Length: 462
Image 1: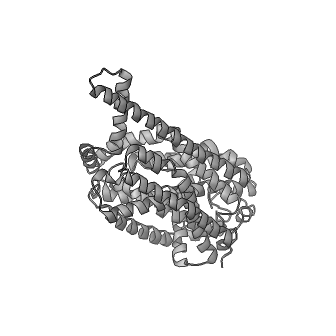
Image 2: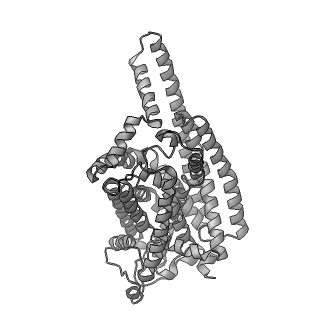
Image 3: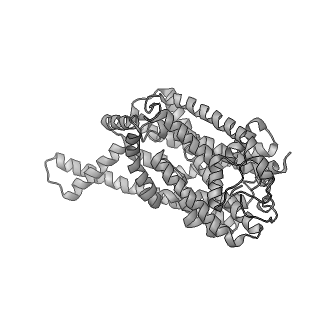
């Protein structure tokens, strides 16, 4: 078996010093990291497809479009329990791991003096890609969050010990849980005040301006959880319109997501997982260095805690007809705990397969997707917006929920096949090539034959 599939430590994964700083050779890549990245990227589409194809809010309340059949509701529940947040968590962990792989390689080669400069340029470009992606293609971009979080927090953490990184990641995740708890308590009190004000108003009593504001604020919460048909019809019409109509619909959401959305809570979502990923790389988990029983127990405990919690949460919010407070209490309050547990369990299962050298018919294409993750992520947006937005086929809101998974399967096959074929001829995906060339401010060799004649040209991530 390939030694990289059996698992490497971080030090072993970093090459001996070479003459030039630049992007990694194929021999330096860690196959377990590539496979996990490809697995996570494909899994993210299972959740994103709803945002591409259906009115906002469906992911957390599938009844906004009217009653669903039992089979579709079970499909929604399974998707929520197994995928929601879990794949994004794993992808964020791998991004954090990439920070250590990038900086450690540069420092091993004697380029420590420029590692900060390269790290900053890399993430500044990633942030710009995220802004362009969100405004001009799809509001649900994640690249901006990754670039900004890395720039603000990650570089000083690159040399911390595994235990410190894991503890810091856990603290950040718990801060997110605390934020959700405070938010729930605030909404409970708002609902109580609004209901009391409505009772007084119904009894003919005069209510204060503050009570009127409570009623107005609570009505907004209810409207977001259960939008009326007129609002949904307007959204569908805008998304089925031309490119200008879609842009005008998405732009305010991008402003909110990349502005207040990031600084109020969004960076917690990414930062905690990135720190955990850095710790898991330093500790050997992501490189496949742990013994098999350790991965088995990680999967057993992760699924054993996360899946029942997800099932109970989904059942409770379903039972309460997706009421706003029930959604906050059951979908969001245990959200981070279950996503970490199930995400880690997913990773453990994949790493067990990689360590065993099994299922190579799928792990090799997954590794190819992982090596071209940026190209596949942006390419998936192009394909999905062409299918669902009005400037393309205009299928937004037209397909039944279950049919969206036919689209997911088709895009998966495209990702797997195209990535495998592309890497037979080229060193990088097209966007990876552009990203690296911009980061080093030097055109990188693209074709494999050309790359082989230029030693010492290395990559940004593992």
